[in-house]
Length: 311
Image (cartoon, rainbow, N blue to C red; front, top):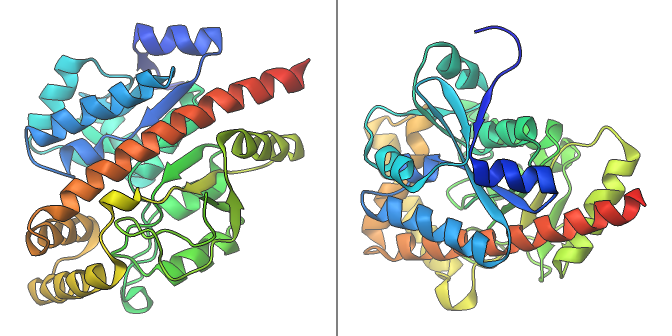
């Protein structure tokens, strides 16, 4: 494979991009590595339905048999949701999967890369990766952070995954010049919980303000991504103190079993699912849907803002 990467874009996504209508990118690791069948398929389809209900078009990103896809039909989502041996792709191995004809699900970093290639400016996910607990010894730091610094895509999430070292993750984002905006509150959310105990660097309360901020950043040139931290709805959150206990127990188990690298996050999420009797998964689904809704509104507002600025 040489030259520019060809992206297999669904007609729905292609038509929306051509017409300047809002499009929201979605990652695929949440399908392949986030939850079991058939809940993973049902969740993926529900997230897409939420985006469509807001007048935007979903574009789930994945590499299938070496081909990069922006937008998946229902049958392909179902097949991917049941697939085994799917790679978990970040920047380091994204091109490998394309070159070797592999099937891979995209993480935050790889989804941002694909979204930029496809011309999609807004991406909804659950939580970003970051600095792992004990990173001073393991040097385990997600490529998501560097991708946010370099790739101009708005990432809407519920904050960094709470299994991470959130203070260090915030410091790393600040060092990289990534704007972090809490939506509608002063506190930085912590994935399953609305308040991490840290103040957010920036706050904005509506999609139009976020779009205006992004349009202004673009006028300065040389910008990377923006992180929008959208707190999980009040009725769906798990208290931060409760989650800290579960996370500590899951981390202890992971260390005892020697879990390392890319296996850490899915292992911890699985442990926490058991420790919370399934409540963490319900909250995870709720926050992803909430993020998808906000991302669709931001995508629409950004399109209007850029169109107005072009006149």
